[in-house]
Image (tube, rainbow, N blue to C red; front, side, top):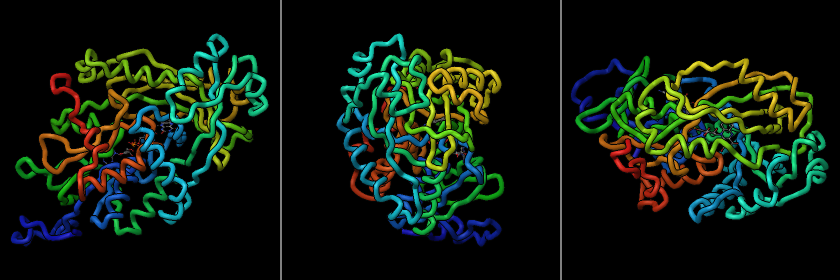
Length: 414
Ligand SMILES: Cc1cc2nc3c(=O)[nH]c(=O)nc-3n(C[C@H](O)[C@H](O)[C@H](O)COP(=O)(O)OP(=O)(O)OC[C@H]3O[C@@H](n4cnc5c(N)ncnc54)[C@H](O)[C@@H]3O)c2cc1C
């Protein structure tokens, strides 16, 4: 493995391009958590890998993520095994990657609204690998003194994993570069093809050759692939949150609602009857939802949110002032101290699939083109699946990866 001269160029003498003489085993597009993890795992196996990201300072979903790791929430045997593998890796990642990932565990409070039935909500978590414990309003407020007791009927609690998402990507990139990987900052503008094979990529200023391309473009994937005539059943929400870099407040716990509206939104918006709408720009498939919660990083910053909107235009413009007011109003019902704390509104695209399983594997009809995207709880599932994907494409087939084939849905519904 490693680089070699492309046969088409060996005889041409063409030497003006930067990548002359280099054929990477893999080019990975996108340096969010998915691309950072996959590029590291491929390079770690001794493959030559070029990672191409358009932004020097990340701006995608990983940049704006909370970075929480609900390793306890697995409900199927596949998820449970991946959670266990993922947690084993997180516990030793800083050593493996040679950089602090900031991984830690902290108490999570899942708040139960005053008009909800605490026992019924607790019961809804019973399929989880580890069920959170139902606690009273008083106990919740002892654990988190900044919580407004009048806003909750009760809460559930469990130990929850966390990393700073940017630090996690930096640690992956550090391990990647130590393993010989190359990082290039530029926007990928085209896929280079020879017949039905992908043979490289073009960026705004360069061109690179490879045997395989791995698309890790997150919420932009559908748009990116459709542009090249490759239909894919991946969707995206416009996600909005507020980041408070120096809040001057100390939360003892992560505070999230026990009822996550975003999951139902994703399920409903990806139903077959909405497929045509997804191909029409300018539509809002469902009304937006707001999942109120706040999470403090180990460096003190607080992130709160989040609004999820299903707008089919990835570049849709959103009323930031109105959204910020809505987020602050709902979050401050739970945590009044966050009503006026200085913060900035942010917006990004978050990818999802129809069945909560990611889309991983070859993309037809082009040979050598692969997808690694659309994760439900990516900070839990990306690390083990990136490792399995790299092993799968370099050795015996992995049954988990095979189940995540991007073309597993019926072609008629694309
Ligand atoms: C507010 C918020 C909170 C969240 N909280 C959690 C959480 O607690 N836990 C959890 O597991 N998940 C959480 N998520 C979801 C999670 O952050 C995302 O699903 C995940 O980060 C997606 O990672 P990704 O690598 O697939 O995509 P992204 O992080 O979006 O990365 C895609 C990258 O591809 C690059 N790219 C796109 N097109 C091109 C191109 N043509 N050329 C070059 N580069 C390109 C982009 O610049 C981007 O950097 C949250 C998301 C948000 C917004």
